[in-house]
Amino acid sequence: MNVYCELLLDRIRLKIDGEELSFQVNSGFYAHRMLVITGISSRIKGFVRYHQSDMNILQKIRQRIVKNKVFVLVNQDVQQYVTLKHIHEFATRFLDGGDMYIIPKPPSFDSTNLENVERIRSEYIRGSQNRDTVLSQLQDIAKPGAQRPAFKSGV
Image (tube, rainbow, N blue to C red):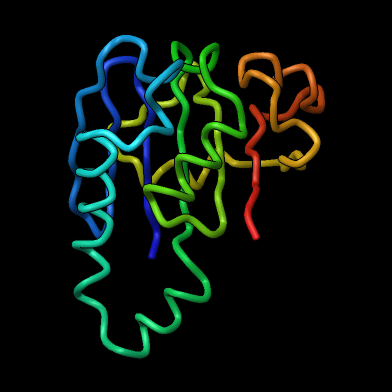
């Protein structure tokens, strides 16, 4: 199952199987509360489980092995507060993520349709080498002339 997520300063947008929900977050969420089980994280996890409940038995078995393919679009305002490690842990715990694509949002990208996020990932940087680096500082690692980097991490 594909899970599309956008991290904005005031909310988190999720889209699964064409259904989209937004979850309001308060100030300091990304710095202190992102990995803590709160009402927001419980509702996010419930939204993911709701979509997994529609699967047949073979899909559920496959889901336990493969997990979700998660695309996380990180807005410019949020990039200074989060690291790859934070986003990876968040997607693993609450989005049931297996393969994860962590994508810093380019300034010209229109994110009204979250499925378009697959089109802007153009290169991969090993997440294990840069896990504790703030996302806004990882732009220097990308190759010159290429689009903003997409970070693939997972199993």
